[in-house]
Amino acid sequence: MAEQRADHHRGVVRRTERLSRNMVRVVVGGDGLAGFATSGLTDHYVKLVFPHEGVRYPEPFSVKVCRETMPREVWPRLRTYTVRAWDPDSRELTLDFVVHGDEGLAGPWAERAAPGDELLILGPGGGYAPDPGAGWHLFVGDESALPAIAASLEALPVGARAHALIEVDAPEDEQKLLTPADVLVSWIHRGRRPVGERLVAAVRALEFPGGDVHAFVHGEAGFVKELRRHLRLERGVGLDRLSISGYWRAGVDDEAWRQVKGDWNRRVEAEEQAAIAS
Image (cartoon, rainbow, N blue to C red):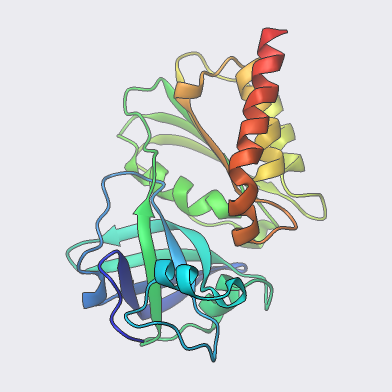
């Protein structure tokens, strides 16, 4: 692969690790990450670039140039993933992947990844870090939000109060989470139920402690929409105290979801404002 432009980064796989039944960790490093930097957020994300095999792309490689000059069907495919950790000293970027066999694009890549494999990376972006002055913290998500929740728990100050509710398929998908804070972690096992159904019920049943809450709620868009309405209208959580977004949408791949996510969010906000006004 030819040298990419400065707004792209190239990582080389250094090692992999099976974290649980359905999650694989991939650590990439190398001189191609010399320009990579984070800014203290705990929901930093990157876009991983997966070119189509057998397609000759313009050099130097650039997603932007590819999209300007090539047919859509051969554009490099992008998949969004949370930065689990970034170590600027060792120049190592840690990414955790949900894997379900051959399903999807990035998961199977992570399952097969081996030292020396290259990964082209765009970003990072991000917008959230837990407020150290909050009365307590609420973290809610499915497997896709687990890396950001884990990074956030590690960043909490000593003595901070938090409750994390995380939905996974089964007990085999739980992970050990480290934090200096006073955190209650509730693992919700999905089983054969739809994604988020049991998680929404658990949040609705949760007794909120007193004090200002800073909430982080991410995952499949359908249950995120339900919880946004619940937290805003029934719990009275202000938008300035709520980081909430649909990381993905059931039945839609990452690229298709990005194309409609803006309109979807605007409809959700409009429905919410109408409900508040009534």
